[in-house]
Image 1 (cartoon, one colour):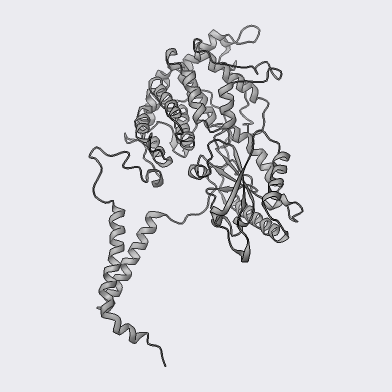
Image 2: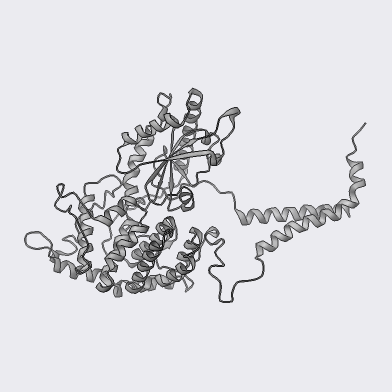
Amino acid sequence: MPLVRHFLVRSWLLLFALFHVSVNGQVSHPSLGPTLFSNVNTVVDLSAVDWDKIHRSASHCPWLILFYNDGCGGCRWFAPRYSNFSTLLKGNYGSDVLQSVTAGAVNCAAWTETCNMYDISSVPHIKFFYPSCTDDGGRMCASGQMKNVALSSDRRAVSEIAEDTRELVKRHFAIDDARLERCIDMHFSLYASKADLLQSAKKEPRKQFIEITDVHATDIAGGFFSILFYDVALSGLQSPESIEALKGFLLLVSRALPSLSADLVINALQALEKRFSVACWRRAVVNAAIPFEGEPRKVVWRTCKGSAPQYRGVPCAMWLLFHSLTVNAKIADDPLNIIQRFIKFFFTCDTCRKHFMEFKFDAKADKHFMEFKFDAKADPVLQLWSAHNSVNARLEKETEGADPLVPKRQFPTREICPECYGAEGGFIPGKVAVFLRTRYDWSKLSRELAVVKSQWGGGGREADDESWIKGCRDLFPTQEGPSVLPSLWGWVSLVGFVGPVLCFAFHLPRSRRHTSRQYRPKV
């Protein structure tokens, strides 16, 4: 009997431990995930700013961390500069205090909760982190003891970022030779780990890239999904005005592009207005079954596919979505004003938001750079087209973050619409309007979405990450109403706790005598 009771105790504990591990997480190998720094080993990709888990010396050293969104045009422009800055930190001899700094990056599209933790509502955003605790006896600083200072990333040269960072190190970090050597040793260790990860990653041979110029409705759906899943989740519902802007945008999409399931998102928004969370919002967006191609964190692009994963994608799809709205919405709905209000509150790309809100350009630099203001009485189709070409003209000269195989150019090109050009080479607005209305006619484009929906078997997409839906079930009750029974995990947790206690209580009174004999010290 004692053996049986002993076995029961051990079995209950083992069952409880195994189930707890299987539910709460599992050990997995590190991976890069979606990143703009896949070819740069001097920028450490982070999923969370949890210093104790990054490296044993991480909380002893200063960090410069870029918070970004891999689908943000401004972030893509800034990424090469940040990469160049990171190479300045790679010094072997510690001749500069700047070399105590390690460059890191967090993709807010993939790790929104981390960005929310540090109040990141627009990107790109740089923060300088430094230890605030003493270093007595090699003690590690806790995560909460790392302080941070915001650093501007607005169109800055590498030398300016380096100088500002150097000054922050001198001001906030008591550096000596030992600390400097520890920090240099740490980031070289992290560089080596990322280099090994890049080396071990199996890269398929690239196929020859061919740009697709036809509009695919799945890309429009992908743009709509992405701006809700990433940008709205990061921005949150900060004010009654922002909630109204989001409602107005969703209503516009619901009326103009009815196949995109915006009405289901509207229903979820009503439930989340007073109790918004990233996890619940994302669950609602995923379960709306917006008919894009791919998976929630890996949208497949066709029209907006770039020559490499870091190019085009979401910014391109946004323009497709906005053009489709101006073509298919009623002029009385004032689509441009609704789009601008939505962008004001929910575009996380700070530079993009400013440009779209103002449309003010340098008239001296180029004839296309002019102040542009939307007119509610004018044709929204031509107004957005003109604004888009103004942006293309501004970006033509930008090479950093731009797709080398898909250069910015005026649209439509002669190849796509020869009748849109006059004898002197300029656009004929009337012909352009006809072309755009034909190109973005939703009654024709939406046929493609029916094929995508049929491939789901009518079930739509379910969230494939349990963390998205944790704690949200009471906000989205089933038709039968909320269950009064504990969940499976609740039952197992209860039994897992009570079982060992009962077995131990049953076992202890009968085994004291045996236990005292067994462990009696020898005299």
